[in-house]
Length: 455
Image (cartoon, rainbow, N blue to C red):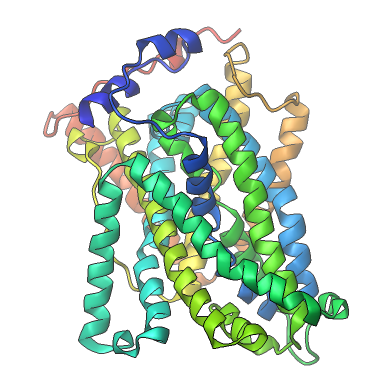
């Protein structure tokens, strides 16, 4: 795939899109609409798994309102920004390309570091979560050598599947998405006769304090990463038309997949707030329908985790490829590779991912606004239908939430995030030193935008 990707990456992003299409030689199968929808779905959600702590943190009413309202104040603005920028600069690398064109290579490199490291931390937990669900059915995986061996084997298998090619990964995501959601469809239908709607307006049990940090981190973690699929833009059929449709469809699927099981579960059983932690949907399924549905939910969780892993690994791999094409990393990084497993506390994983992702998103919103001002005449196949004042207002609301997520982070999360940020800065200057001394081989990328007339 190296020759093909090199050809794609060197096409000037600001040429007329018709001319661009004619200069690209496609030698491999591109992603069509349906696989892209499910890859975006797995980048963002992957199913209702993981939304349970919102109920435990703030009660049913706030959890339902959160998953109903939050997509409008966060997910939709992020998806709109992604749709415009991904169709204007349809190359592998996504947000790295946007920051690079907006503010230069330093900020493109730092954007890549923030997003990549948040992806690695997020990605590293999935094989462990997969085994944590499997051990409920197969206790042999609960601890000891068999536990660690299973994690190692799962990581190798999932990474190999990703290496087989993005088209295969895309259609695998479709299959995994459909199959993993079927148990929740059963859960929702079976729960309907048992639903007492008065339970939906509960603010939580008396004496249980609200944990707003956990509540907002859970919402954010379950409803972000809409821009991740932009790193695959160079592998999508007609991205200018396909991306907006895929983002809209994935957004609708995500909202339905979160809300229906949450309404069914909170309405069908009495509230025991302390039980609403990760994995509680399996227990709810047993209460509502029996052991068989609990096992189905657990199997569905494993399939969902596989989809999450594949989508996140694809994003990380093509982001690295895009940074290589921009000359921000040596050519040796141009091949897709697997990632190792990290063992961290799940709450800290969510917080670290959210903090680093928030830094990247603030830079992404700034890049979006600056590119509108810097390149007003550039052809945008999809354009957010607002002028600058409206765009600023659209970005300020989610940006305020990003700042809140960072402000409420623990000292440990701030320390780890600061350490990783300094590592990203050091990496940029080290790579720059390697390029100037020709210690490593880099691709040539001519930054044309700095000298363009933007009047």
